[in-house]
Length: 388
Image (cartoon, rainbow, N blue to C red; front, side, top):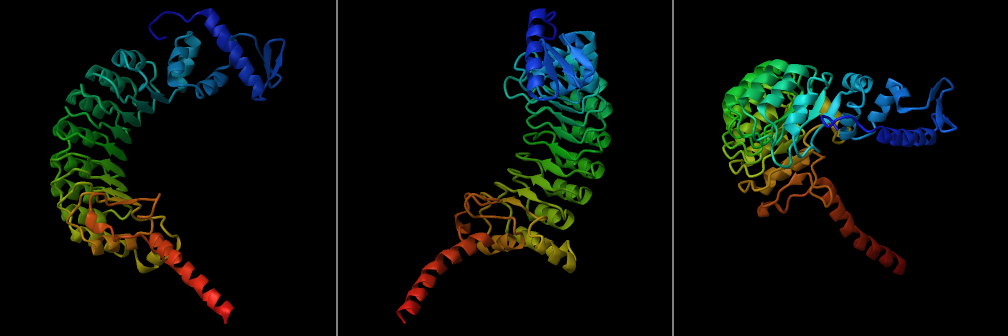
């Protein structure tokens, strides 16, 4: 393993033998006398003979822990891995993740995706993120979720070192401030997906105004349980990020109809909206969503969209615990978006905790009910004709 000395030769030989068996079975080579001949040109008799191109193909099939181990075999393998590796996940590391990141970041400079999610005891510290920012300038996808020990230092470092970020997950990073998040937004303007779930301190209206101003390419935003978010912040997002497709506002108890209306009017590609426990939402918001279908599309495009069934428009809507809503308003939304389902096994219109909405049904559920009722009558009519 990295930092634990050299790998034993017998272990490498065993791995080599397994590799030969795998390669022979795959049909891409011929095995002769314990050796492997590839495409009639290269004879591999030892692990050191494996061509770099083949090594990278092999490493693409194994887990990330094995990749890191391979990078410590020799300088040739290390260079090959460092130059060829673009995606790495260290979520499996339950001990010494911070030290591991500090040792790997200077080597794996071509990384584009780095997953550092911590489902166990948080280990990651600011110096590790600063090392990532200093060396991994091509980084596009970064997951730092549940990194409770990180402070604003990490966001400032990422702002300067990783301006090409398109997806950032900092859910559960409760120590970040809204000032640092505002600063990050000013530099990382290519963001397409941002997860701020549980970041109550950083996800303020001030930060959302900055995101709306700088991150016009944003398509997915999770603000779950960010209780300080209000209509001011959401409306700025709707105006500045018209390509929003997925918005999670569950537990944002301050927002009202104005937020939903802004999203309905300004974000024509909206596909998923989570309003769980947003108790200030009323029928006004639902009718706005229903009317947005026609409002955002000319008549000809609307007919074309209906012909394609449900390629666009809302596909998921969670209004659980929104107890102020009435059946007629929710039914209007359901009727406007064919992809919203209440039928068994396809629930994409989620109404848990709203006992007054049990009469709301999607089109296919209504059709199934009609079909079920039609069969007995049809059978009865046949019997009557037969008797006549």
